[in-house]
View 1 (cartoon, rainbow, N blue to C red):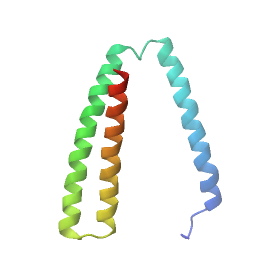
View 2: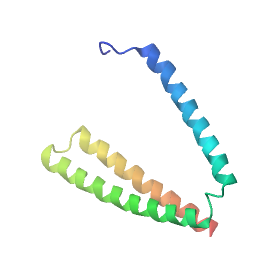
View 3: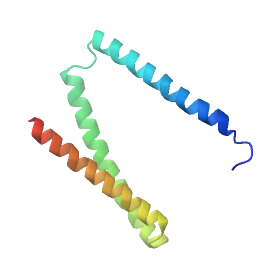
Length: 103
């Protein structure tokens, strides 16, 4: 593989990092519920932020996709960006389906 890359350290460190992130998430979630951080206002702000973020990501993917088509042609990067676009749009479709069913 790569010189200086210790696979054992990676295999130990990655699960350890995931466990630490999960613990921090759960602790902060509990503190947030006690202090009422996750009220209706919080939910509305984050819905708007996710919507804006999704729009910016869509535009960015399209721009990068066009750059790849003009610079490299239909190679591996083009097909990877196409896969990212399809997954991005499918996630939106599934999310809107779920949101429509819950309303």
